[in-house]
Image (cartoon, rainbow, N blue to C red; front, side):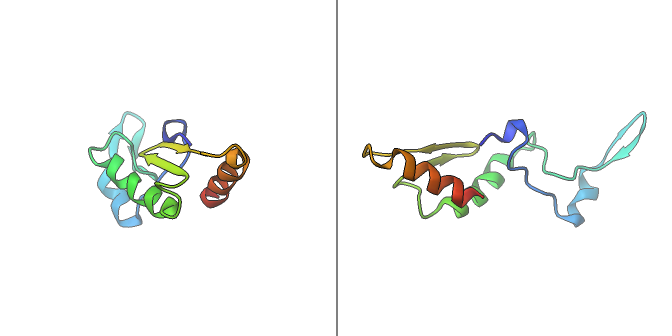
Length: 90
């Protein structure tokens, strides 16, 4: 999954939306999702991904921010492990 392409966006809490406003020539706007240019966005994103994948990390999956690697030490697991990972992400 790739956060850069728009997947796995973290919704902003309603109270925090007004804290992210910016002004342009056409009006005032607030972010609805966390802008990934923020300083601690990586850490903020990493926490829910770790929580979602905690049963698989270190066994069949490695996760770093928006990069997820599903591994299968046995040939028979090359279909099963990615299927489990996608199921969990859904």
